[in-house]
Length: 318
Ligand SMILES: Nc1ncnc2c1ncn2[C@@H]1O[C@H](COP(=O)(O)OP(=O)(O)OP(=O)(O)O)[C@@H](O)[C@H]1O
Ligand SMILES: [Mg+2]
Image (cartoon, rainbow, N blue to C red):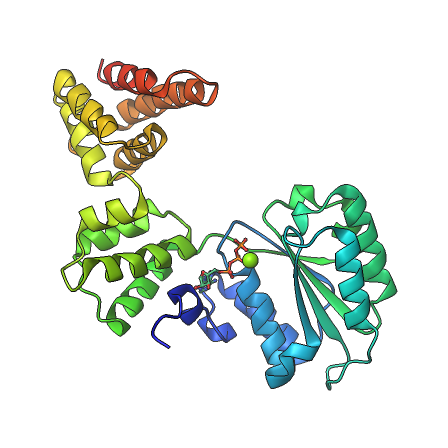
């Protein structure tokens, strides 16, 4: 199985492998020890381990008989609440064939359901609660109606700390025997900020694309479709040195290469944020960020991104 996507290959199978906070791992261990869970709502940003944790619980409770006891549904895939209701009804009508005493319905992306659909879901949670536990997951908890929130234990998932991401990347690099330079590794983690799924996916693509050559920041840049922080740093350095025209020309050539203005802005923000820039004091930093946010806002409001970006470079240089 060489072609299995690394996000699956490196998806944790046990609580011990799960990255994130100690308290989260302790909580999950507690459920497994007690062999019981209340209805749960996992809430947090993408790729922080919500689906992974639901699967870990399922595997811990049911082992090899996961299939008959764990139903995974995706609220945004299914054709509406009626389909979900039918599937849950079908699944829940047989007595659990396990020693835990309940089956699990895992409803991913519950925040994609309309309010009416969530009302129907709430009733389902009550009707089937004797032999079924619901685990819901969402990115935005404010989109979950209060009656559901009050019927579940809410577990918050936070972005994985950067040092843990570094360790995982190092582990994958070693296992897969990837040839990558340190700066490219940094860039990969900076570019995909907090999004572990993206980090792993870019790493796998870069490995395949590099064809045995050492992966450098250019490879990461072209695979991710992102602008490298290094290039943005060069622009900021020119600005600090008062070489505004040169900074503008660099920006124009980046645009001419087809880079998305939004990506250039993100890279510039990362560059300003990174600590090793010479002689950029805190107040100048804040002033730059304030100006950038204004130009960014204008772009989101429909102003021409090309013109705004060039104006922005001139403005933060003055
Ligand atoms: N806490 C974590 N520990 C280790 N790996 C993780 C963790 N979170 C995410 N990953 C990695 O990212 C991939 C995606 O994680 P997962 O599917 O659990 O995200 P999610 O929180 O359900 O995201 P979404 O909101 O997009 O559904 C996993 O296969 C795994 O490789
Ligand atoms: Mg998920």
